[in-house]
Image (cartoon, rainbow, N blue to C red; front, side):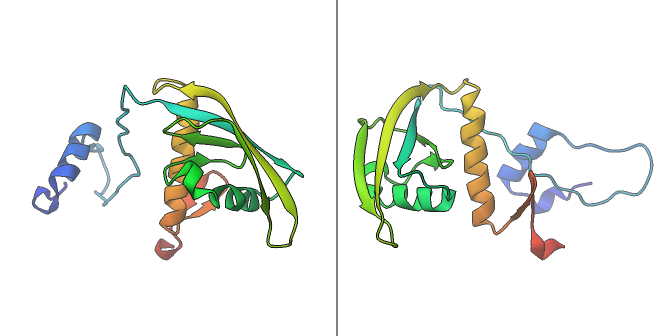
Length: 153
């Protein structure tokens, strides 16, 4: 049984969304899950771009670092998997050159591919990128497809 005295209004909202579950035998245990509701904004469109590098760069971390050095272009709100960039605003197709820390010149092209509506299956990809980034911010460690908190081990 959950002590409702210790819950915030937001917690109560989540519990009512999930519902409390009780088994028919055994001992009660404290249990939580990573369930959260995602509320889509019906009038918001996400714009999808493909990002190419010349010469090709294998390291996803380096690709992201080079792209993110252009903050004035992509701002702070983005999702990027190393090749596909999602932005909440539209930008013109663009190309620019940047020098790596090793002195190599890299040409980066950002090309608009399409817009993603909230009900699109591509929305799941965007949410997965965001959740993965949040898990990293929380110092969660990924093993295969799952995230774990090493402090709870």
